[in-house]
Length: 265
Image 1 (tube, rainbow, N blue to C red):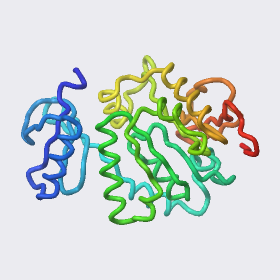
Image 2: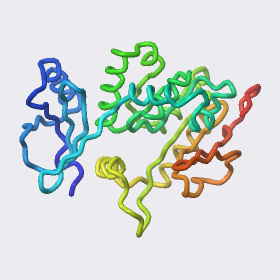
Image 3: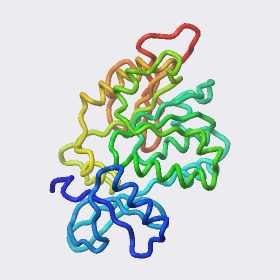
Image 4: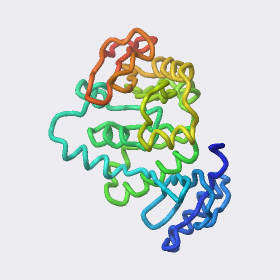
């Protein structure tokens, strides 16, 4: 299936006036076609209703799944996880004074919300306009319930490599997180729903693009660049100075390409 065959925007039948207005604004901003809510075609589309914006995947037989950004939920899970810093925060150095972070592969924003809840100021980058729209909607809803937390997050809908490359010296982040997507290994089990949808939307991922992103992250950061990987996957590139391992994910830590005087890993 061509992943762009159905990527428009609908609003649910029960959506109120605010949701319908939001749907119209999103459709115009992203140049998306308006699709009837009962359109039977299979594929991906965005849906706006009173609960927010969702990315919906329609499959054969009327099967439908939806993804949405829940920054408030991710932050709440962090708050209920105890006093210790989560693995991603320790990998980025929040326990060593890191406070300014770039999440270069925003996705659904879970790491972004976790890092902000741990006290970081986070700039989240997302190059795909549909995912950026989901993040913007999640940030809007977060601001309604936790304005101080929302103020710690800045969304930039852009390709991370040129953004990091153009980063002015005064704006360089302490640390950069990247979570690249790769093609499924031959013979591996079907990935979870979220990854299936991402591959339909973005394609299978490219290792060379991921290595270029890491190079840009190392050139832009002042203290460390961190690559998030599945726990059993190998390193993206050699040269990591540390690896933090969890049950499902590992974090490989790299120093800046050009070390900055007075900064430590």
